[in-house]
Length: 243
Image 1 (cartoon, rainbow, N blue to C red):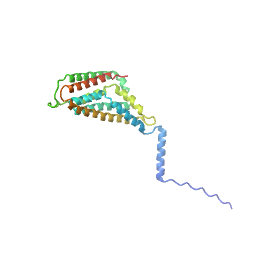
Image 2: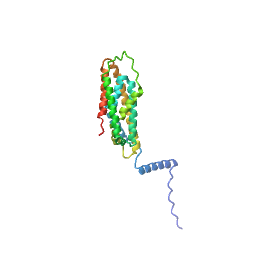
Image 3: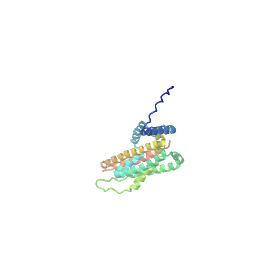
Image 4: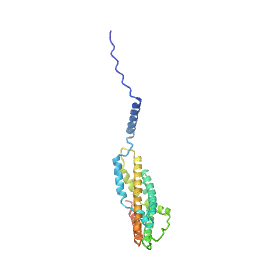
């Protein structure tokens, strides 16, 4: 009699847990292959962005000059109010950049120029006024109440009307976007990081300038420093021409 060949051994079935995990991995890799993008910003790119941002923020501009001027003139509290105003403007500009609306600057170029020169004139007027103000002994004088809203609005307008900011964000942020990841999430992360770092360092400027105010309590030095900083902020805004 002919013997039947033995049946081949049946492959062992993977456990339900292992098969589920393998299925998830296959689905994830399929999604990556379909979209052609990985979901995260590379760590080395992100750390490079943080380092470059810190270096750039440490270079004083019109915003920092206004923050320091208000802190020296009225105290750290009003410097922090100025930081709030400039931070709101930065938030608006970063949101426009992430949304891909930097082209609005070229469309509304005329209006931006008008606003910029109005801001320049206002800052120069404030600087001259502070420079020529009579000397006051802060140790013997109660602090004059100031409208926090007006100071915050001043900071907001100075930051918003700088024509280089949108162009800078539009050119700077994409340098740290990976081609292998979704751009919108990366831009949002970079913009949020820039905003947080700007707020932190601007706050340090405001607090340090408020401490320096006590060293300038007597004589005309306080008025000279405040006026000079305001004039510098106005000149910085005037020189911030669109390339």
